[in-house]
Length: 213
Figure (cartoon, rainbow, N blue to C red):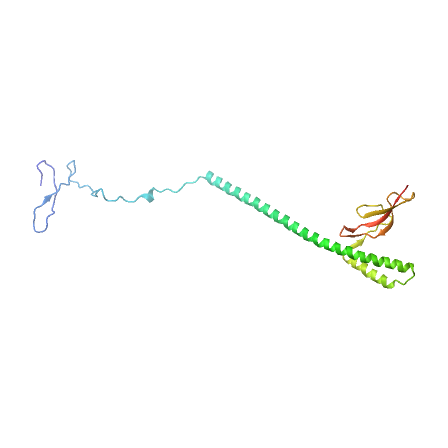
């Protein structure tokens, strides 16, 4: 069926089956062709979601990765240095604590040794007195022998001073005699025996030294 202006119209029957009037709808294109456009969607129809197709993975260059790696290496080095300092502080504290404990124990040991040596000196003087009076000192000799063994067991060793040159680290001079036959500062007499323990002087030897005049 052709319209008056010559364009071909395609009648669309919107009537019901009872044969009511037809309402013509012109679906022809502007150029007059009989083709029906494929896209008949309305403007309100939502477009397909292509957002996933538009997403691109983040691109990180090798240079940027190298920089990140260097930063992490630097952090590791900094943490290693901090750990070394902490360990060094701990080791210093541990050594100081052990040294304080050892010094405290040694101080008490030396204090005991000094008190013991005073008693030892008393036994030595008693023996000398009894010997001068021709008294039998066998009992004292046995006691002194046991004392010597006890001192040796705990590394308390007498200082051998007689005939040596005076050394202020081990000796204490309390008397001087003139003797031209001896070198200056020769120890001529031990007035009180001195002792050392583990290379430390428990008490110095009291001595008499010589001068040539």
